[in-house]
Length: 154
Image 1 (cartoon, rainbow, N blue to C red):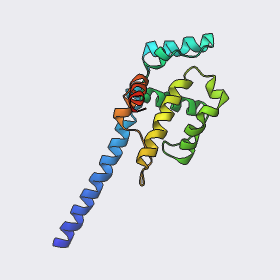
Image 2: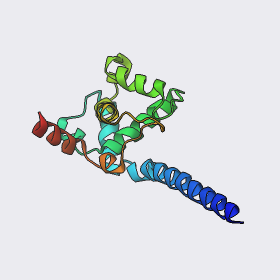
Image 3: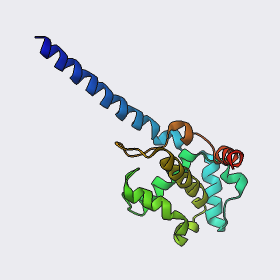
Image 4: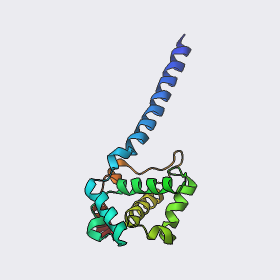
C-alpha cells in the first residue's frame, strides 16, 4: 500500500512540473501581449509607403516582444516554419543582418534588435533540456531600454 502512495505522489509531482513548464512557456510567448499599437502600425505602414527606414526615435518605442511578433509574421509570410530555439531558428537569427531582402523592410531594425537580444541571452544561458525562450521581463523591455542597459555595460 505504501508503495502505491509513493508512486502516486511521484506521478502527481511530475505532472505538476510539466504543467508549470508548459504554462510558463505559453505565458511568456502570448502573442496578444506584444501586439503593435495603432500608432506603431501607422509608423511601419508609412515607412513602407515612402520607402524609408524607421528613425531611432521610432524604433525605440517598440518592445523586444513586438520585435518577436514582427519576426513571427515575417516567418509566416515567407512560409518559414522555424520553432523558437531550434537550430534553424538560431541560424536564421544569426544570419538576419546579412539578408539584403530583410534589410529593405522598415521593421528590419526592430526584428534585428529582437534577434540580437535573443542570441546574447542564449549565449549567457545555454539551455540543456528545453528550447531557449526569452523571459517575459526581457520581452517587455523597449529597444531603448535595452540600448541604455548595453551602453552602461559597455
